[in-house]
Image (cartoon, rainbow, N blue to C red; front, side, top):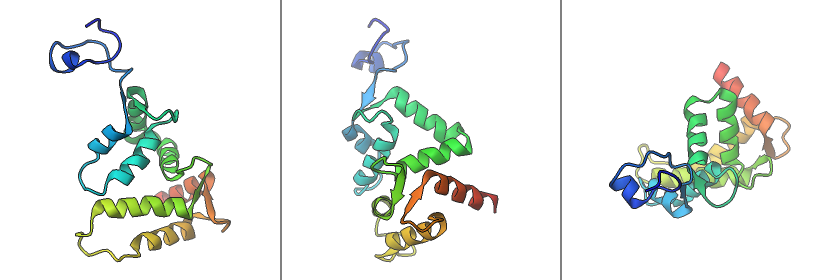
Length: 159
């Protein structure tokens, strides 16, 4: 192996390659496989995949993945909130709508499963979305902007 480029099966399992896997990319199917702790996790895996796929090319490069993890683990509050907003803003138009938030909440509740204690009510995701919008949609226009999101989250963390 030349030490450059993609990790090969040999580089991963046989001889050690000394080059970092910066050109390695994972696709949506691999992301689904990573998020396997519940059979209903596929939808949430799609949302996570899209949040990590920052250049929107249909693949998460090693660099995309490391940048995302770095933000989540060591980023500033501002960086983490921007990343979270990007996760919830499914269509990347700069706004979180009730529909987008409901899609995320349903995916999370489905991933948690029906066997949680206490048992979750069927309308729990919708109630969560309504509570979210009551707190975050400051001007009551039906969408949450990045500014409203950050301001609301920082206000909650200060309390």
